[in-house]
Image (cartoon, rainbow, N blue to C red; front, side, top):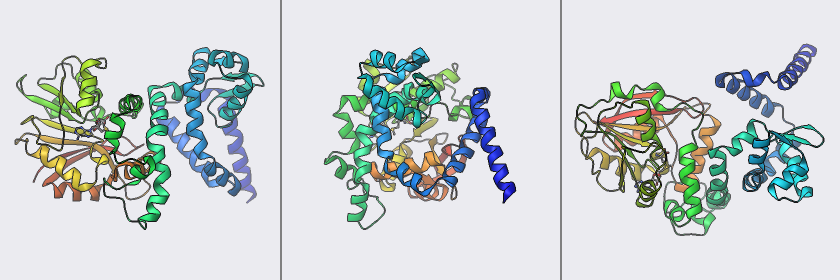
Length: 397
Ligand SMILES: C[S@@+](CC[C@H](N)C(=O)[O-])C[C@H]1O[C@@H](n2cnc3c(N)ncnc32)[C@H](O)[C@@H]1O
């Protein structure tokens, strides 16, 4: 007992000295993650009951307060200045200094800024994350679009007697927003949310490996003729994955084609993101037959997780109708493990359920879904631990 207490005390001291040494910044991403996950588990395993309850009941404050920091440009100002006093930050953001002090007190207590002395605040890794494209887009997008649906989840489940949510026309989304519009239709009518949604699609996996890091696409999926479609990104948003492919393999032979809803393709055509040159953009509804025939790779990233099984079968059958013998479907999605699924994955699973009556899937779920669409899995390449993201290569039986 005494030795465990001594070990724990020594560990706490070592953590304190590591934090104050500045040495953490020299660690690579893998080591930082290992440490972060270990600390997270330790934190939860040692949390006192009162702290747990207060952390959870006040958790709905964190996202709105993050939005205040984003909208006032407080995080941006601190990132630019590296460190600043309360009054300097209040002046830079036009926030009442008394309110600013209270906000900063909250942010430092949640590790969102550092406070090296009584009246000095310093940027840290969390402040920088809030200034990244993901922070600037994800924070307002989640608060405006997903949170009302999240809040309706308990009432919805109570009313449906805790049945699994599988009907895209009847899920907490509609109750939370008091709307009859499906989520993509609702977002389409709100240009600010549409802008955040698209930026979030571009940035939500920033800092993680991508499928092109583990697959030599040019070697695996080459075509001979410049006119042959080599990569069709179905529901590819602004085309960031097409651009990544072009940048990774500048000499890749064949057409790279982005497909998405009309309003998204309009944005791509009028305001393309950098690097889109040479990529084709096509409006296409994936609930209709695929117009590009015989492509080498039909790629769907985070598409099927937006839809319940019966709708995914429709989408997949539409791809299948265009495939020739060399065509492959590349599904870029999570394959959830049966045990110990990562937190970034489980929260997305329930977010998909709440907004779309959809889900993240395990290997058994994928086998069952693809079987219903007349497809089999040829191979699965896993490329992230944080979310168990994989490329599932599927072909007709
Ligand atoms: C979750 S996002 C994924 C975007 C992109 N594949 C990625 O991984 O970043 C879903 C995408 O599907 C598109 N989408 C939704 N319904 C569609 C439909 N019926 N036909 C084509 N695209 C659709 C959306 O506009 C959005 O870009």
